[in-house]
Image (cartoon, rainbow, N blue to C red):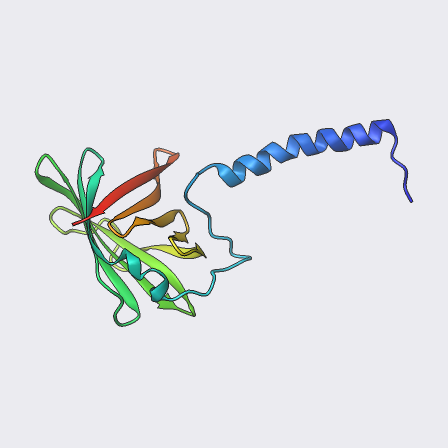
Length: 175
């Protein structure tokens, strides 16, 4: 059995103290969103696990009114339309879908200007792989749905702008 002297134990403790905060901060940088890990993959899930997202939802964000309408599961997907209205003018729209694929879920999204011209290229979407699912939360890569109550949900989305990433909460009430 190897014996540690006082110097080697001190080095071990110092090394741990230098590494441990980096691990803790990396895991808690964002309070409500998680990162997808290719080595772990997505958990098994079906649309039944997120059917509580269905409904007409409205709230406030980005200095205006945000509205989302999620359809119930049909054809292995749930569809959503989103709009942001500021000063009584549409700023942008989104079309989203949560689909069942390979025994799990994936969230896809496209943005559109007020005139319905797309932000992304024709065949491009933002894809968010499922990271974790619980009874009242669905964690996609950087995008979380939380069921607060039957009439309230919160979406947490990581948004990057000018090299800075922040987690934005969208608090919705059922319409």
